[in-house]
Amino acid sequence: MSSLVSIILVNYNGRRFLPACLEALARQRFPAWRTEVLLVDNASTDDSLALVRQHYPWVRIVESASNRGFAAGNNLGVSLARGEWVVLLNTDTVPEPSWLAELVAVAEHTDATGLASRLLFPGEPARINSTGLVLCRDGRGADRGEGELDLGQYDQDDEVFGGCGASLLIRRDDYLALGGLDERLFMYYEDLDFAWRARQRGGRFRYVPRSVVRHLQAGSAGLGSPFQLYHIERSRTIVALKNAPAALAAYALVGCLARCLRAAWRVRRLGLAQTLAHWRAAASVCWHLPAICRDRLRLRWWSPRLGDGAIRRWMVDPPQARRLSA
Image (cartoon, rainbow, N blue to C red; front, side, top):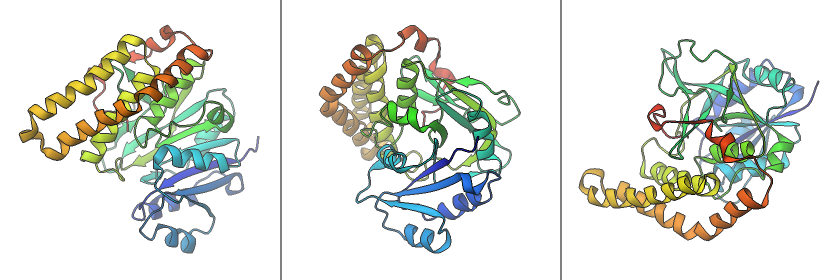
């Protein structure tokens, strides 16, 4: 087969990451004539676009008038992509030369909805960022193997619950049929939400261990920042409210509110910015609750789907999830 592959990069003031990422894409062993690279720029105020236009003219630039976030940015890119497959790729990644060829080699011989790469943190020894997404029994998402040294324990080509959006190949028709990423999820958990919705309709995801990417992680949000905390708290609650069984959805909402109260009690230790991030997240969830409930009815009652049992078999205990999905 010789189908086109579209690589979608969503950029917001990511000039410091772009050279390493784009140089790595230029070194791919996959045929260049079968690849298009779309850079969706979310109204950056640095010189990202000038850099790309001057040094990487083979990149197709899509300009957004505002910062639409990761989910909406990818949806815009996919809507304009020409490939049979689309690859969501973070700008703070450096794919190894065989990264794309390995993904496509598997894609051409499987009917899986999506394929996940092996994501490693930069530096030596190699430490794992993600080998696919897992779903926790409390509704959280996590990256399988995150923080572990890469000693070959994830060398097996496995089926996984979903794939981390930092490097994820999806059939474009499946992406569009599922409605793309939820644009309410400005960033974080949009990949878990997509996987959950796909799974409920019989979709599958596979992990491709030979497709390797170095991922800085939280390059845009700032690891541990109030901005990141706000979006993780908000997104994890919205995703559970949309997709989870009733008891788990209620647990997620109560948990979000309880963490607000705990943050207020511990404000001196957490700091005002972290405390306000919790309260802003809860307020946003409550504001969007009517729309979330409508989506829940549509997804769980008005559309054909698998039973909750098919999802529960993928759930793991929270202690196995060291950090939240990113």
